[in-house]
Figure 1: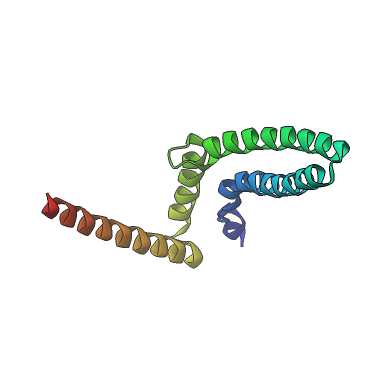
Figure 2: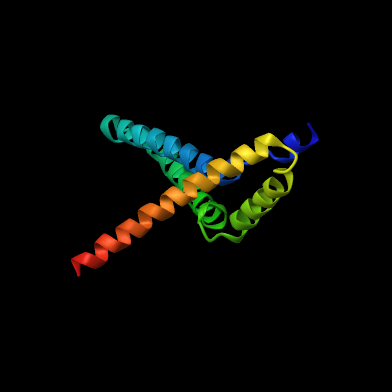
Length: 129
């Protein structure tokens, strides 16, 4: 029971960055609708509000982009360290906890499947040259 709390894989560390971008997409869609309304109906207040919303969405875009670069890229030190810690916990707990053993087995099978497919892809690419 103690190990189960420690073995939670924080999948949301990677996906938290996307929530900012999703909110930004909704904000941009609303801004586009407001701007279309302002242009069609010739409402200066709607156009002024849409400019403010564009600035806010631009700031959200920058924040989301920076967070994806820090947390979401494969070679990100934050993500790599987080995954390294999770896998070492799983390896140490695999002797005691059957859940940890099952997770490691699934990951090993998946990685070996991808690696075998990549080997085959490289062989076929080399044959084309």
